[in-house]
Length: 134
Image (tube, rainbow, N blue to C red):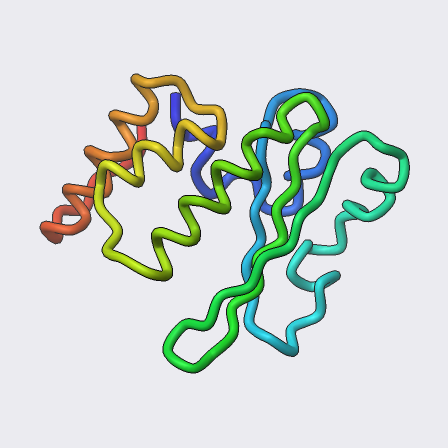
């Protein structure tokens, strides 16, 4: 179920990546925020040095404020970083949609059924309907 992917990962992303449970981690923060704070004190840099995961940075200007993204993936899943950067580019230059939410969820490794559930929840939230996650 999607519960394992929603709100339950904070502070555990690196462990989940190293165990193979998670294929992509993305952190976003405004200029001036400490990366160690953004990474919730997880040692991503050590895992990069040990060649267990790869890292890429990308920044976008959003309404005059720079937003920095740091993206991590296991080496075997590094292709996901390029795909996610394309989604970020679209987000910052065009209009987002529920279909792109589905693609984003797939980039994070959810199966198609879980992606459908995420999109359904977001659609309900957009209409103001509060729905618990199963």
